[in-house]
Each structure stands twice: as structure tokens, then as C-alpha cells.
Amino acid sequence: MILRALLCCGLSGSNDTIFDTDGVSEHNPRDTKVKAKDIPAPAKPEPYSAARAEKLFTTYADVDDPSFIGAEGFEQLCTDADISMEGALPMLLAWQMDATEMAKITKEQWSQGMDVLQISSLPTLAIALNDLNDLLILSKTPLKPAARPTSSLAGKVKKPGDEGDPYNRKRYHEYARDTKKAFGSLYQFCFTLAKPENSRNIDMETATALWTVLLVPKYPLMGDIVDFITEAGSYKGVNKDLWHMMLEFCQTISPNLDNYDENEGAWPTLLDEFVSWRNGPVGTSS
Image (cartoon, rainbow, N blue to C red):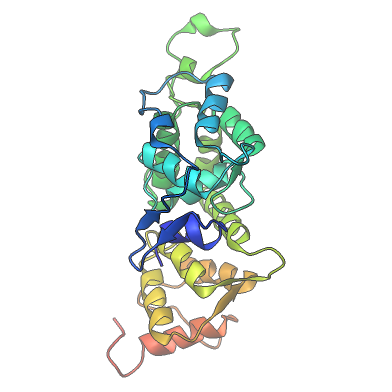
């Protein structure tokens, strides 16, 4: 399952975007949610302005209900900002906006999120999300806090531009001080976001799509687990406990499984069965 389909079709409730078996969108000709002529050309990063942030929100807001950006606007926003829909960037965007529904951002969530980050342009938003992707998904070396350029700013209110940053990186540097904790927060957020209302589980197709973009880049072992789940075809849902234990398994068990002990720990049945499959006589172990 391609994450694009998960974000913009599977949980959005929209009938305006159709996805074929390859996950490529085909827009309904009757759809008028987002009009290309209304989309501004990407601009260079610019200083934050609450008015510009609001105008940007309005550009992508749902035509029928301008109080939120829906699935169509969300995808168009990502396209215009050159934010790939195939990786973790859309989930990072939802996380930073504190969204409560997949591919939906309310005006209040947008205003608060962009104000905290001090962002009001698409290029700057893309920079912020890629910074987080590098830090939390790709485990790259954290960016160092920018030094104040001169002493002439003493006594003045600090702004993002004063420190040479394109946006307010205060939150970023908080994450950088404990990346494991920050990633755990993102990971648990994604489960809550993807879980249907009044349900305790997310379906396995959704879970594997999220694991593919969140865990596989960090933990190669997760790629084998996804292959096992796909081959088995018998696992249907993921509860909060399995979701949590999957991360713990990837963090504590080595890729060659040499520190796995079936007599210690209480791993979910799925993971015990994965180990048996990986170490089985069919030559799948490495």
C-alpha cells in the first residue's frame, strides 16, 4: 500500500480522488476542491507573517468548508512544496500541526503550528520537514544552533531571522537533545492518527505502510518483518501493544537476530513467528 493512498483516500472519506492499483491519483472531473490557477508558484523562503500563513491556508482550504484543509488540498500543498507523498514527510507535517485526522488540518491547528515554527511559506515548510526527516527518520547528525550574528541584538526580542535560521528551530533542537524520545512521540502519534474512531486497532495494510516509512529507513530488520507479514497474509490488525512492541523489537534485536531469546521477553506472537520464519529451513535467515 502506497502511503499516498493511505493519506489521501483510505481514511479521508473523500470520493473526489480515485487511486488505481499503483497508487496514482486520478482526479474526478467534477472535483473543484483545488483549482490549479489558484495555487501560487513556490517562492523563496521569507520572514514569518501570520497574515501570510493564513493566506497560505486559504489557498488549500476545502471549498465547501474553508475551516480545514482536506485530502485534496493536503496533497496539492505537498505537491507545490515539493514534499514527497511516498515517505514520512506528510506524517511529519501532520505531527507538527498536531492534526487529529489523516490528511486533514484545521485552521486552528495550522495557525498554531505555523506560529510555533514561524513559517508562512512553502519553501520554508519544506526545509523544516526535511530537517526533521533527516534527524528522526534518517538519523543524520543534528544541526547546530545558529550563532547570533552580532551583539547589536542584545535586549531585543529574538526572531528566527536574527539567528540565521529560516524558521524557529527551537522545537527541532529539543528533539535533537533526545532523538529516541522524539521519534517515540512521532511513532505513537502516527498510530493515534491512523486509528479509526471508536476502534482499538489499525488494519495491517495501514500499519505496514506506516512501518515502511517510519521504521524501515532506521531499522533494516523491519524490512524483513514487512516481507514476512506480506507473505503470510494472515495478519489483519494491529493494536497499540503490538505497535509499541514492534518499535521495541527493532530497537533491541540485532538484524541477524543473534540476541533474540525466545525464553526471555514477551514478544507478540507475530514477532515470534517472524523469527521462526526468518530462521526456518527455507534459507531465509541471514
